Image (cartoon, rainbow, N blue to C red; front, side):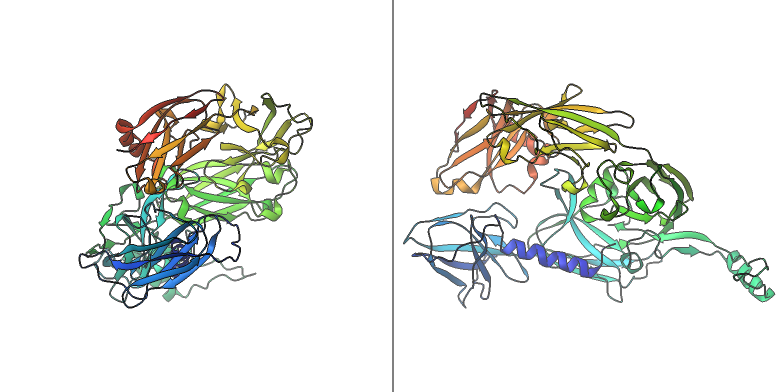
Length: 607
């Protein structure tokens, strides 16, 4: 489980990114200009008092980090001089206060980039910093006694901007985790306004990620009496080579401290949320931690010919929606090595629904494409209710996925299509390294994945130089476009995919007009299909774009169809993955139809 040191490192990284947002990896050339940007940093409280010693960062949007950094004086003032023309983001922060970008109305809200001309003096800017909230309470056991050294963490619901999945994440500001003191009391500060889940891990759970690291057995009075009787009888314990029967001491019922969510539940779906306002201190958010029955999951892996048990490991996943929510916190999956005899074991597993799945033991043991160690798989669902489980996993080869590339356009297609890489990445992952091996095209555009484990995959292409000017339009398998809902690889079923590139991708563009034209870049534009069946995580028919300083926006390679368009300010990152959020936009949205190969222009006017 997570330790305090891990939480603090994540906090420092997130805060650093919040104060110095990097938009691109381009290195900024050392240049000097003639513009000036100046203003003050004040408190968001009614008195608007100046904040001295605040750290203010100015980053060029194109060149990103490193930018210009300064601190405010006694009157809360700051100034940047000799600034070259360009677009910039301005951010400020100070320990105890939440980092804020200029133009944002709340932490992590949408900022307003500054467009700077040569010789221009932009003064009178103001950034009002909000004090973070505080949540405090006591962690107690079943008897009401405080538990010292428990790890308490504040988690916020949000959306993974890559996969679109609803997840829990660290707050990224202030103190995101704390250890309870000798009374079991915790106090977490620097929490941005929002809805949160409070989670608790005891020190014995936090010190190691294995489910059974600190397996504890609850002894009854009869168990203790029997142990004393055996000890008094002087029965010797067995030793290597001894012929005496070993002494069997009473085992008792195995129990385990599980991750607990406020107020006292082990299922994230049943957790209570805590609302924290700006600068608010929420006291009395207590958590009751209890030991619950634990079990062992034992089993054997039967490998394929040409493999050894050392080639694989077994992964224990929390199944269902809870597993998806916990994915980004590394709280879901635990691995166990497979022993030379093929056996594996998980101990201290608390009640719940799990999935056992084999994985390559390490990247160094993957082997060449098509080798059994890369493609073999086994999976089993396990329901744990306090009793030990025995599971047999028999490895099976993956299913073949083959396909070809088709070029549909007026431009002559490449004479040699070799070198194009088609990629299959599991829908739950953001890393191509988790994808299926294979997918490299030959001269005629044919590709193959020799063996793919059952899962749902996103299909993408590496777009090499030979297909510049072409865009991925569709990928049809079994009559469905898998670019919309993923390629579903089922056990025992092969798949064939036809991937089509076009040189006439559809485009949607326009200009956003607002009462104050200089503030167009403060808006976000959300474009989403009118067909709600496309409102899925990471859907290509749900798009988000920020207009430029001139109000212009462009969405390229948008699939043909009917869409809603909405423009709004202060949108939370990833909110467009939320179906309820999109539903709320529909009444005021503009309806537009984009045809195949059309360059549709749709202006938006905010009155």
